[in-house]
Every structure is written in C-alpha cells, then in structure tokens.
Image 1 (spheres, rainbow, N blue to C red):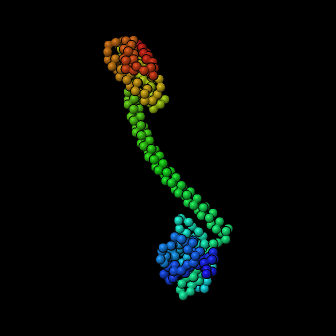
Image 2: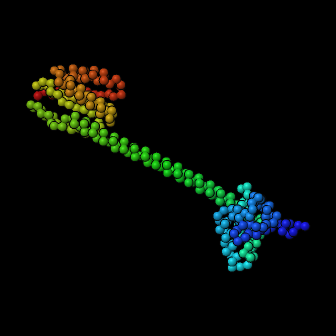
Image 3: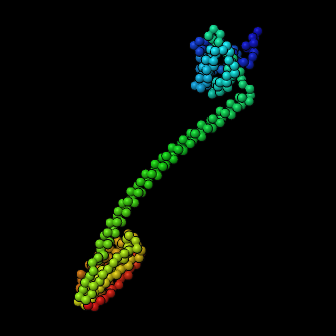
Length: 275
C-alpha cells in the first residue's frame, strides 16, 4: 500500500547533523533525479548557488529559536541545467531537519522566472558595456598615440620652417647699398613665413646699376625653394661680364632646364640707374 508520503505532491526529506540527505519520498526523488546512485548526498548538491546555501543556513539558524519555519523560497538545482524555485518548510527533531518542499503559487514562480530573465539580460548588457569600454579605451590610447606622433611631427615641421625662414631672410640684402650718387635701401616683408619674392642688386659698370626683382607664384616651401635657386643663379651670372639683357636671358634658359614643370611662373625685372 502506498503511504501518504508517496502520493503527495510535496517533497519530503530528512537531513542529518552533517548535512547529508538520509531519507526522502517519491516526489523528492522525481524532482532531484540526478541524486540517484549517490549514497547520502549532501544538501549542497541540490542548492543552486552560494546565495541559496546562505539562505538555507539562515533557515537552520531560525529553527534554533523556534520549532518550525515555513515558506522560505530558495532556488534549487534540479539537474540537467534546470532551476526551480521551491518553498522550504520544516523543523528540527533530534537535531535532524525534517523538511518539506512545495511549488510556490504560479504567480510567484512566474515572477521568479521573469526576474531571472531580466537579470540575465542585465548581465549580458553589463558584459557588452564592459567590452565596449575596453574597446573605447583601446581606441582612445591609439588616438592619443597618433595625436602625440602628429604633434611631434608638427613641432619638427615648425622647426624646419623656422630654419628655412632664417635661411631665406639671410639671402636678402639687409644693408643699404651706396653708389657714387645713389643709395638703395630695401625692406623685405613676405605675406607668409616663407615667401616667393626675391630681389638683389648688381652694378654693371660705372653708370649702370641693375635691380633684380623676382616674384614666384604662390607661397610656402615650394616657392621658397624656387627663390633659393634663382638667387644663386643670379649670383652666378652676376659675376660674368654681361649686360642685363644677357643676364636675364641666360637665367631664363637655366631656369627652364632645371624646372620643367609649369607649376611656377616668375617675373624678372631690371631697373637701370645712371650715376
């Protein structure tokens, strides 16, 4: 004959002083089928996690001050990855826990499932945010490295531009040029740090002074390089015993040979002054 313990939907069990499950009924064995084959399994084998274990021990502590405790909702491990919220009730008899497990009302179980689902989603969002934060930190470090490299290159470029500016200024005549009845004063003020303008002075004979003026289109490094070439071309041809027309013609021929591109246009002008 079946006893009441075998036909009820309540899971009944007994736990000894060491925490071993020493007796249980049919419903208990159905819920925790993964315990089959284990001799005297421990109560921790059916509790879900550390939080559930802590709640179980609080239940035991409460029994020390009262004869019976009811309806402690605890998550249990049903095996095969299944989790179930059950209500634990019981009392101590001869230092042994005589407990019972029942399913909570449907609404409570449903709320527990929803809560677990929300917690799972929140955990997934937390992991995703953590990953994104790691990616953002890595991107920030990479961007900061690029910024430091660009800043270093910009400082190097500024230093090179300042040196080029000093070289170009040094090519321009700074002192006044005096002749018998003529004095030529100059001032050089480019629109940019490196300009495309150039001037120089050459005395051809006792009665003729040439003022060389050059304007290369554009500004910046490219124009300043062209100006430098023209400056040394002028000084080279100025040492020859030739007139202003020949000087300009020879400079033009040399310039075309050096610069094949039509990127730069320039103007050469000679002003003749009689003493």
